[in-house]
Length: 75
Image (cartoon, rainbow, N blue to C red; front, side, top):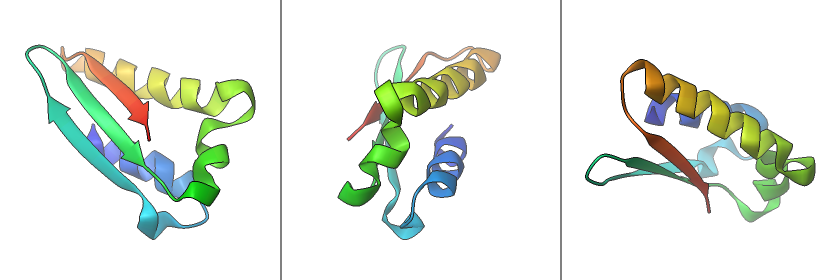
């Protein structure tokens, strides 16, 4: 999941080297915290959050394939 989120985020931003994904494992939940440069925040979120919603949908679907619940937080 981390690699997929990193790939998607680096494809969207102007500063791909600033993209970091932190993985936090909880009981039955995996939280992926996406860190991007402040100038690229708008590119990752998109108008009215559409791109962020699409990213979360893709990651959630990938998590369902391996029977894991995955949540994406954009920080």
